[in-house]
Image 1 (cartoon, rainbow over the protein chains, first blue to last red):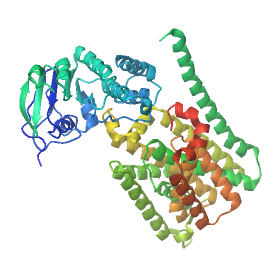
Image 2 (cartoon, each protein chain N blue to C red):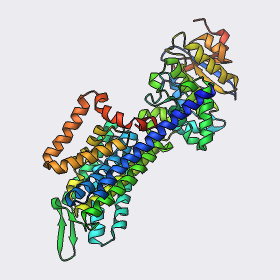
Image 3 (tube, rainbow over the protein chains, first blue to last red):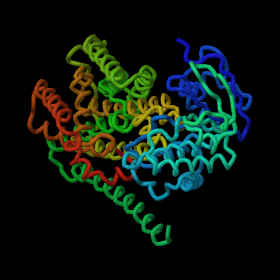
Image 4 (cartoon, rainbow over the protein chains, first blue to last red):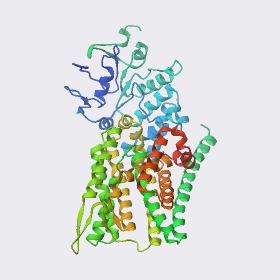
Length: 211
Length: 330
C-alpha cells in the first residue's frame, strides 16, 4: 500500500507552506517522513542541502527541524517548564543560557505564568502552545505543524493562531497541515493539496475552496 | 509579572529546594546514626544488610522509576557482582577495594548488555528479556563449579565462599551506611540532573523525547549502565558481609524485592524505594521468613499495588517525598 508517491516539494528559507487534503490522504505521513518517524522507501529529504533521509528523529531535530503532533505528544505529568527545558538539553547550553531560553520561549507563547503547572492540568489551547514552546526551544530552522488547531474550542483557536503568526512574522520556515482556508490565508504563501498520497496541485490560499 | 510576585515565586522555588535538601540530609542521618550508634552485633548485621538492599533498590529505581524501564532481572547485576567479588577476593586473593570495583564494573558491563538488547523494546518485552537474562544467570550460577586451592571445588546451590570484610559486624554496618549514603546521593543527583530529565521525558513519552532532540536509546542505555554499577557494587558488598556468593542472589526473589520496595516507597523518588527496602529488609531479618514465604510476600505487595488504586499506594511516599517531586523527582 503506497501512502505517499511522487511527492516533490521545496521550501525556501522563511517561507510557509500549507498542506491540506481529505482525511487519510497522507498529510501526517508526509510530516512523519520529514521528521524522521518514518523512512521513505524511495526519494530523499534534504535540509539546507544536507541529506537527512532515514535519520532518527532526534538527529533531525538537532539538524533544525521541529514539529508538533496532531494529538499532542508531551510528558503530561511533568511541568510545562520541564517539557520545554528537556528540548534544550541537546544544545548543551550553560545553565543561565538554558534558563533564558526557557523564559524566552514561554513568553513567546504567553505561558510564563504556567511554567510550574503540570501539562495534564492545562486546557487544549495551552497544551498546543506548550508543544509550540517545546518546538521553539530546539532552535529550529523549520517547523512542522500537524493540524495545530485540531480539537480546539473557539476560545483556544485565537491563542494558538496568534502564537503561530508571531513565529511566521519572525521568519521561521513552516509547513502547516490544516483544513481551513482562513488559517492558510493567515499563515501561508502556498498550499499543496494532497489526494491519495499525491500532490495534485500547489496553489495560493485564496484559490482554495471555501470550507 | 510584578517584582514581588517574581520574588515570591523565586522564594517558592528555593523553599522546595531547601526542603528537598533537608529531607535528603535527614534521610542520610538515619542509617548513619543507626550504624554508628548501635553496637549490638545482631543489630549491626541487620543494618549492614538493610543498607546494602537499600542501595540495590535505589539502583533499580533509577532504572525502573526514573527511566521507566521496568526490569524484572535486576538480580543479574547484584548476583554477578557478588560472584565476581567472591572469585576475585577469595580465589585470586585481591584486596576488597579492587574486588568491589570489579563488581561494579561487572554491573556496568551487564547493564550495557541488557541496555543494548532492550533499549528499543516495548516495556512488556523489556521485562521479559531482563527476566530471562536473570534466570539464565540464576541457572548458570547454580551450575557453576569453581576449583579452589587445595583440590576443593565450590559452587552449585551452596555457592562459593568469599573472605569476610570488614572484619566484624560494626565495620560492616558503618561501611554499608557510608556506601548507601554516597550511592543514594549519587542517584538523586543523577535523577535531578539534565540526564535525569532526559530519562524522565523518555519514560513519559519516547516520541516526545525524540522530538525534543533526546537520543532515547542512548539515555536508556546509560540508565542501565549506572543502575547496573550500583547493583553490582551492592552485590559485591553482600558477598563480603555474608562470606559467600550464592545462586539465591541471582534469583527472581531478589529481582522482585527491588520492585516491591519501589512500589512501597513510590518509584521515581530514589529515597522512597531505598527507605522501603531498608525497612523491609530489617523487618524480615527480625521476623525470619522462609524463602518461599518471602517471595509470597513480595508477590502480595506487588499484586496489592496493582489491584488497589495507584494513588492510595503512593500516598504515603508522596507525602514524605513531595519536595523531591517538586524538585523534579518522581
